[in-house]
Amino acid sequence: MEIFLKFICLDIQELKTSTWFVIFMRFKAFVYVTLKSGYSDPEGETTANALTGLGYNVVSVRSSKAYEVIFEASDESNAEYLINEMCRRLLTNPTKDDYRIELSEL
Amino acid sequence: MKRQDIRVLLMRAPGTNCDLEALRAFRDLEVTAELIHSQKLFKTKNLDDYNIIFFPGGFSYGDYVRSGAIWAKEMEYRIGKELKAFVEKGKPVIGVCNGFQVLVETGFLPAFNGKSIEPEAALGNNTHGYQCRWIRMKKVNKGNCRMLSEIREGTIIQNPVAHGEGRFILPPTNLVKLLEKLYENDQVVFKYCKEDGSPANEDWPINPNGALDDIAGICNPEGNVLGLMPHPERAYYGHLMPTWTSTGLKKYGDGYQFFESIIKYTEKNF
Image (cartoon, rainbow over all chains, first blue to last red; front, side, top):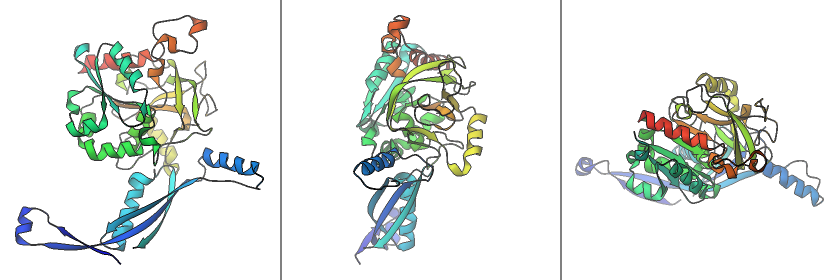
């Protein structure tokens, strides 16, 4: 486990009276983003057609995206919270996307 | 406010397009329009100098992650406060195509309860993939979107669309309630329609992307933030319209009234 020490001070006054050390750990998250069921997926449909054309008995293809995110957090629960927030704010649009996370400590 | 004192900010980012067409349309209306790269604006942060902000179409940041997502989040952490203050002053903010996607991703649209942190709607994959065609849309707004008050309700406008992700959708878990709210607040501005103005009923290609209830453009509850998928700047001049050879050449096309209305509204109210 790689441990990172980071020095955090809230303001100049805090710096004078106390010092805080927070241990940060590094995490790796695989985020799989898929379209919610029922939404059209032209990329998946076109790919299915091409695979069928190549002679495979393909029933359907749904396209998805995967991200590998390496980030720092104070502990595992903090890491889970942060990666979920990242998903809701940027990696997915909650209106149309579902996501699944595989989180591991580095 | 005199027309020549109106200052329009056209934002540009890597991958935007039709910004020059929009610039030309605004300049033709004799206002001061400036095309500025968003990176430059992130340093100066001087949105107060402007009366109108226009987000053009295109594929900002190569549509990475999702259409408009990266530009929207960059805007949020670089000039989020300034942009929010601009909107709260009631000044017009317009997003066309990718600009509409950016306004949805930043949470300025539909903004049922003010600007949201997470997007409350989405402009998802078109049902028939990338669509580049002329469509008709009808103005259905009853007056909430005051910047378009010069365009009569029921007016049919012919404009081109060119996008792969423009299908307006709301969260499926709360769809009926949110759609009702959108109409209650008079936030629906344009709907795709047939030549006679009758509803497209989500039929392709009249509704080119399968948008929910044929919605082509919406505004926020206050009416000063407007987003639409079709490109009025590409139909500004008469010679850009697809029918001018049969109907005769006029100086201006259907997109003219869109820009003229926004400028007239700003002239009267600021």
